[in-house]
Length: 178
Image (cartoon, rainbow, N blue to C red; front, side, top):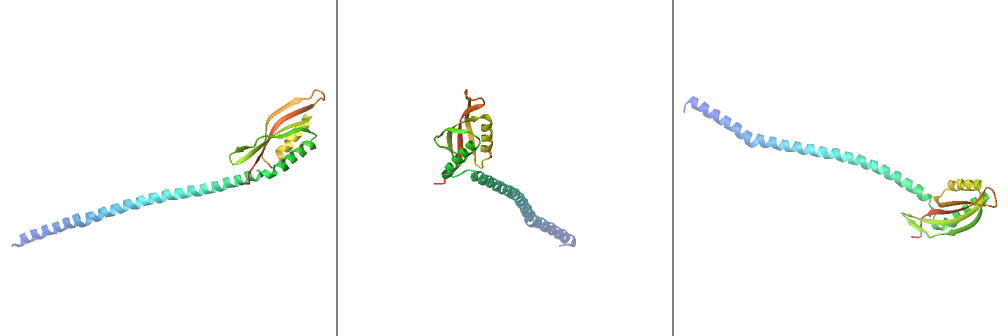
């Protein structure tokens, strides 16, 4: 074997070794590295998404706390069923203090609303219009949730400026006997 053929054989072996090492070592390592980088990018994207979700969950937690506080305030304005008599006597005292005469107070059927109960009271009061106005203003200032529906005023023909009012006053309460 001559020196030129040895050099050629050596050169072919070197090129062959370079190709084999590229094909069986470098190319798979590059593919593995590329796959690993893709996985890292996917995990980073999921991590960013998780951070956004965590931030929104914290916002939701704060909103939930605010809603719970609002519910607590609302429920504090709902008396228990046993306090309805007290509220009814308060309303009667307000009417008398404003110069209104109670003609009739009748309880109607209790209605269940979402989470609370409504006790409608049919009332008839007599007096002058200014007394009604003062009565309604004081009723509005009560620290309880009430609603007036079906209000009708009728002028009394005997006394000028006097009227008779018929209305349904609803008192909302919680049933704590459950």
